[in-house]
Amino acid sequence: MKKLQTIVFLWLFCVQAQAAGDSLRIHLRELEEIFLQKNAMLMAHKFDIEANRASIIQAKLWENPTLSYEQMLYNNRTRSILPILGLNDEKGAPTTEQAVQLQQLFYLAGKRTKRVALAETSTQMAENAYYDALRGLKYELRNNFYDLYYLQNVLKIYDEEIASLVKTLDGMNTLLEKGVIPIKDITRVRALRFTLETERKELRVQMIERQANLRLITGARTEVFFVPQADKNAIDAVSIQTLTLDNLISTALENRPDLKLQQNSLKYEEQNLVYQKALKVPDLQAGLTYDRAGSSVPNYFAATFQMSLPVFNKNQGNIKVAQYRIQSAQKQVETQEQRIITDVQLAYRKALEADQLYKTYDKAFMIDFDKLFDNVKLNFEKQIISMLEFIDFYESYKSSAVQMNRLQNDRMNAIEEINFTAGKEVISLP
Image (tube, rainbow, N blue to C red):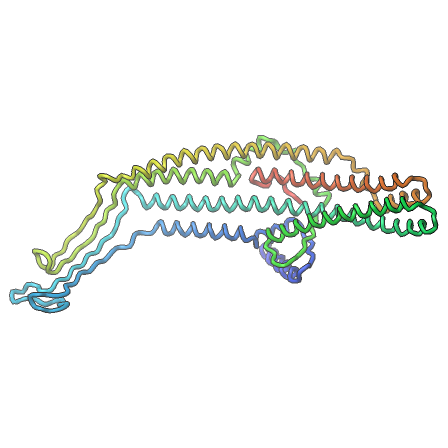
């Protein structure tokens, strides 16, 4: 049922995105469903995994037997060209020569099994590379989603302030014509409006960049505009207080795919060393031979065995290479483990700081702006408050509202960074 719902949702997404410029109201989980189905990089990694799985099949296969056939071209005794099988002389001895040989190569010292093990480890590396790419892309998608969500909220604040200033300017123009207010006052308000419109334009540029990133990650081929939706109460309810640094580090060391990839690389080099040592042992090539007239005995049958002698080449160089690569891989694993511990510690501290700052921030200013503006405008028109106080109200409200949204955005990105560094969704985002 869930799979059917996913298919239906993706179909609706494609239909809704047919016309360029369409807006799509979407939640984070819905966006992730599209991303998992349509991201080209993830598809490429999946094909790489299948290619490695096919290499396991290939490694398990036996070498093909070889068949050789020898035919006499010219018999100088009978003066016949390509004499056919069955001609004998007066004594019954064959006068034509045909020889057939069938050979099969047998790998010794378990070389075939060791090649299969190498192919299996290579497949595990491809799988972990996929999960590492998934981890990074999901982190990027979520950051862009919440960036865009809070940029939309900030843009709404700018729209409300600019719309209010436009109304104020209309009234001030009338008062200016009547000579009630000086031109310097209306000039200050016009300058404030210009500043707000310039800042709003910069916000829109940032939103365009986030939109482009989301379209790239989700594989959207048309210029669909995502409108992120989120539950504010659910966002506020997200908590990191139950997490401990030690548990996060343990989770990361157990689940991080980039660490698993390094561990797989070490395992591969260890298996390769075993394989290179096995290559010291020569392989056996066995077969059967039939020779009609080229031997001292007519219709000669024999078994053949062939093996190289490991006198000069004992694969010494490749064994040394494998040994040094193991040492290198071990150091890379140690380095990656230390990097992960550092990443988790930093992400955890940043998330604590962002969460604490957000929860202690005074949210009292987040009141109905329209009602507040009516009071401020009325007091300004009655000259109860000065022009400086009037402009200061706009700037203070904008600064506080923008700062609040920035704190919320930083908090969500910091929380998602914990998931990213832990290699697992330890905190579920709404």
